[in-house]
Length: 205
Image 1 (cartoon, rainbow, N blue to C red):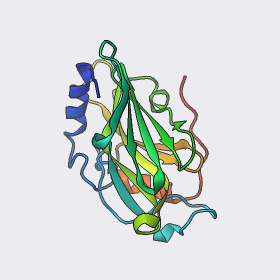
Image 2 (cartoon, helix red, strand yellow):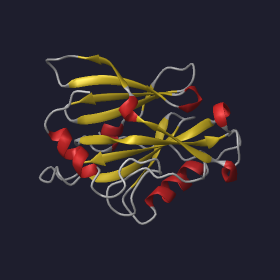
Image 3 (cartoon, helix red, strand yellow):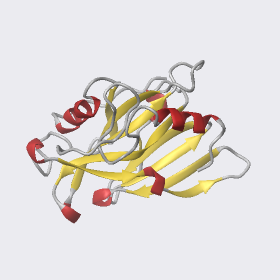
Image 4 (tube, rainbow, N blue to C red):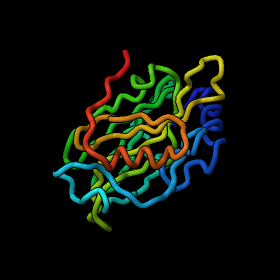
């Protein structure tokens, strides 16, 4: 994916706070977010394939996405990568900002609006995303997604992005929470993903 000069700074800063994007859920205990592996599953609701107690995590890498559209003379690209349970992710990059679209099996992609949720600032996504759901093997059915969004909140400090964990409800097709750096950040994001259904977040204009 094509990136302007700011992106390497963001990527280095996003990975400086802990174990990086290793399969282990979605955030460090206070700095930038990372993904860390742990048991505990997707979204709480009567239509879910498993109870909250039976939820587990699967992980996929945004490094494996394939660029499907770009232009050499313009700083933008669209990448596609497969997720579990027939889901597909699209990373839309432009002007040092990453956005995300999610497509459920047999459905059109839905924009999550990460740039708008972050107030329009520069951002970059973590390399690993966490899927929460029920089932085993090929029958794993994700109902929630947790993605690390390293957001530049202070334009004067682009080297110090904030690692926010965004929880996406795959059934509603929207972000339902943004978990800021804190002790137990990963666990807090999973608890939201596994808990009762929450309303979609309003995107900042």
